[in-house]
Length: 430
Ligand SMILES: Cc1cc2nc3c(=O)[nH]c(=O)nc-3n(C[C@H](O)[C@H](O)[C@H](O)COP(=O)(O)OP(=O)(O)OC[C@H]3O[C@@H](n4cnc5c(N)ncnc54)[C@H](O)[C@@H]3O)c2cc1C
Image (cartoon, rainbow, N blue to C red; front, top):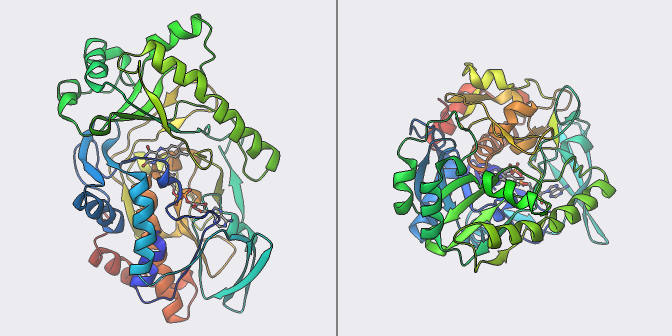
């Protein structure tokens, strides 16, 4: 969405292609957008993602930003209204759309990209000067000839996937009392200083948990087949809802139809034990009911582009300076480990993302943004969140417009000009 809007606003004719029947990607499942701010409270993401949130806040479809001692900040965005907003937004920006259309083949010849779209039985051809791949798996770039790697550098293992769900009817005051009385049972990393987080819980419009470790231990002893050692989730007191990614499925590979199908069903089958756990063990959930399930299992990690630059966890942790910075982040390196049922973290200062991480090493006329850009397992554990993905998307769309307008490959875009435009359109480049 951010790439398409940025390209259109900077003078391009845009065709946005989406395999499902609605726009908005995984953010239509995730009701809490994390990482607009650093833990210190500095806003590190601006531009299009901030504009979206402010517009949704203006119509009452998003909460205020709440500071968080681990995630920096969280803002609750109603996924249903985000989906409606996305449909309105493409009309407002004059963006052509193909829904129910998968990118099935791509070729790059003589400065042109030819794409075959498959819509059920129908095939459609499209031609463009630049292709921006925001497929989350890098599928379109791969079809164009780009190299991709999967998962961790050492062994190819990926962060676990989750079939997210939301329950309603939560008695939030009872939950808050439990958390205040059992502070060790609220968040996952004991070494993190939570400051006044507990005291301020009753007044928050939204808050993040990684909770119930002791209750899970009890439930597992009682025979419930639970797959994590704490429950990651987000609480929405105003709606009395709790969104959770409690389910945990290892090695879901969307490039392998059997693995992808198994992952979807295994994730859905984990909902019932977790629902039972919430109802029977967690204060405030006795009368909760299932109110939302996803259109697809959430894939935290799949493929990584082999780009002109590979962004690493060290780059983030040392806030490496890049002359071609096009976006910033400060979200922690949030790893849902494939090795154990817990979470891992490392906390970076505000860091920058270089334009070269969007450029496939061996292919022209293609840019890659979102969670499949050129970043390691560790780096993308931070850059993958919605605000940062959108910020990178804005940069990719803007660069695509400059390349298309100038009749040059994206690799030859004038970085200073790109940065100046991004800054003038609200982006934070550090
Ligand atoms: C379980 C889980 C929980 C998360 N929790 C949070 C959270 O609490 N807060 C937060 O900020 N972030 C969270 N994230 C991260 C965030 O949701 C994603 O990383 C982010 O949305 C990535 O954006 P994207 O645009 O790269 O990919 P997506 O949002 O996945 O968008 C990719 C789009 O491309 C489409 N597509 C894919 N292949 C094709 C094709 N061949 N042809 C046509 N269309 C195609 C897809 O249908 C999709 O609409 C979570 C992620 C997961 C998986």
